[in-house]
Length: 98
Image 1 (spheres, rainbow, N blue to C red):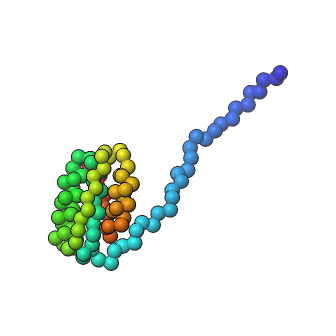
Image 2 (cartoon, one colour):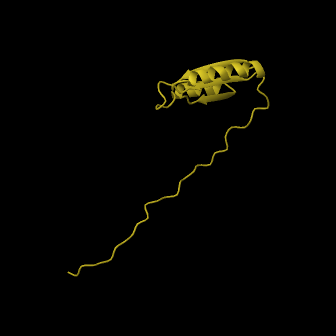
Image 3 (cartoon, rainbow, N blue to C red):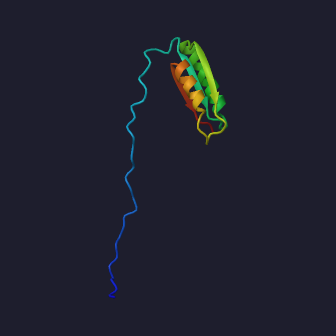
């Protein structure tokens, strides 16, 4: 059996697959908005979100705020909590601390 001295070079790189994302439509106004908050449980995320909520309440008359705190930054938010936020809120903000 003859031995082949051919080598095959393989390019190990790939192109990123980026899913299309348009984001949610803008709200016409924040006045009276029911706001949802997701705290990712990282250090300072709660402080950042509390400041942001205070600012939004003062400037834009947010009508209500519903909070959800994830058990840890590395875990996904509870699907039931996401469903409730989607049903009960006009907009949702998530913050990452540190």
